Each structure stands twice: as structure tokens, then as C-alpha cells.
Amino acid sequence: MIQDAWRWLRFNLWYFGQPPWDTQITPPELVEFAASRKPGAALDLGCGTGTNLAYLAARGWQVLGVDYALKAVQAARFRLARLKLSGQVQAGDVTRLDGISGPFDLVLDIGCYHSLPRSGRERYRAALSRLLAPGGSFLLYGHIQSQPEDQIGLAEDELADFARRLRLVRRQDSHDRRGRRAVWIHCQT
Image (cartoon, rainbow, N blue to C red):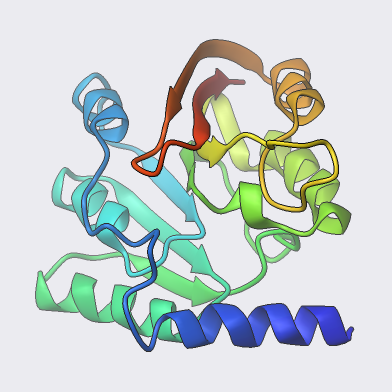
């Protein structure tokens, strides 16, 4: 309980400045994906200040964003309103998505899952099948664990579990701008 409160406070405090993960740039992997699909319904898990929500909404997608940090939720709502784009943004824990109903043609996670507490990751993965429409896509970007005991990062067994629950379309390993190992995965129902 204290760990959850500390985590919530830490993420909210980050948004009083510029969090290092909030680049305000839509990644080329999402641009490529959106260009190859007709718009549908999208859910952005860990949407931050709404950069990718705005990108998708401007291209005709119906968007819903969820973030843990209240300041990020406010900023995402403001961004959509300022750009006169429709979409919804709500505060919430992505490991407890019972109040969200799909189906979504796209579930997007750019840098959220890899920072979740281990205790909630299984609930997150289990919710994907319920949230995705038939033929729906799950796009995930995250850092890969350096050591098995690391609290931050994706473990190879978690990546394998995504591929078991959904059909792995593509995996692209890379490094982030700080040189850390990272991965993009695209899975479909």
C-alpha cells in the first residue's frame, strides 16, 4: 500500500517538470502503423500528456487515454481541447482496467508496461484479449531488463507471454537514446 502511494506520488511529481520519457514526438513506428490502417478505436495505456492521442485523433481515430498521473491527464485533456480534437482521457491504473470496455482496434503502450510493478503485469496482459477487437493490434515499446532482478524493464518471458496470448506480427529490437536495450512489438488478436 505504501509502495503504491509512493509510486503514484513519484509519477505525479514528474509532471511538474518535463519527464524524460515525454518527448512530445510521435514515434515513427506509430506513424507507420496509422498510415497503413483505416482509423478505428484506440486505447493509449500510459498516455502521458497526450502526444499520441492527439496524433491519432487528428487522423480520425476515436481515442481513449489512461494515465496514472493526474497532471499528465490534465495536460492530455488540455492538448486535445486546444487542438479541437475529440477524445477521452481518464486517470487510472493500467493494471486495473475493469471499468474500460472495448473493443479497440489498437491498444498502444509506449513506455508504460516496463515500469509497472510486477504484481500488476499479469492483470494487464490478461486484459488485452478482452480489450482488443478481432484483428486488433497491440503496439508496445519498452526497455528490456538488464538483469533478471531489475524492477524496470521487460523480461523475455513476458514478451513470450504477449506472443502466446496474441499473435506476434513483428518484433524490433533497438536501443533508446541513452543506449539502453529496447523493443517494439506488434501483436494482433
